[in-house]
Length: 325
Image (tube, rainbow, N blue to C red; front, side):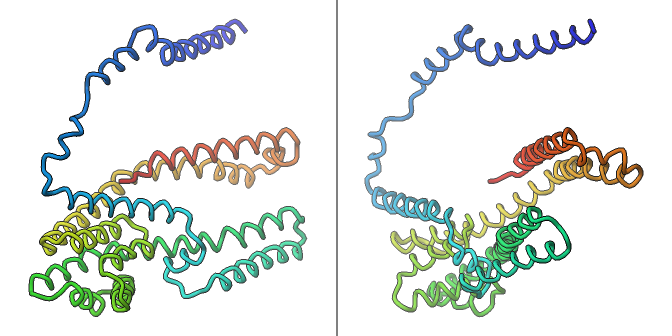
């Protein structure tokens, strides 16, 4: 008993000391005041220096306006409708067909468990998950797979445009070459650009709309480069060649990050699968020993707590090992 009391007192002291170190030490030691003084001294350059090169002001304004428009469209893209997500997944379904299919799937997974003798609440949860969650998961999977194919083929498509421009072809004709030779989904996306420009829309705006159908930073970069070069002029082949290099470097960086994070992902998968695996093995060997977890009220409460804590741990590990750049 004394050892347990001593251990509790020791852990409490460590906890209080850590909290005091985090919250009280910066106030007592004057670190916050020093940071404020350093921030007041470390000023940025005056605003007046922005107007030193007036000949580049118009180009900068065009770049800023283009970036501002892209940011506004990116904020709107976060709230995507079902029809937009279906288009991004490369499907030819309508919104009504998707809703009807989801409803049929949900009703099937609701009625089938009820006919098998399962309770109403589990059957309702299963039907809701199958009708609402499963179609959207499949849609998200198809969307990511299509985006991956687009990213793999985009640098080659940009190189085709660069070679066409260097050979003397206009940008519009170079895009037609990409439509004729590139694989899917590059072919369909660039065909949409060509068709949109053919009906009278400016080429820069048509290229910027690529981001609406393929919400990727790489597609965003392509639209920005074409839009800025269309408005302000310049060496388009050089700009697209630099863009192709950036796209390939981003692809290499993504592969490097994936290789470096595989160990952490494998560890997270093992840690997350151990509790249910051990539970299943114990149930196979000794069912009466572990059946108290779902037959006794205290066991149910403990299982619910374990599920909550395991879910929180898995989400934290997922957040730690998913890198964005």
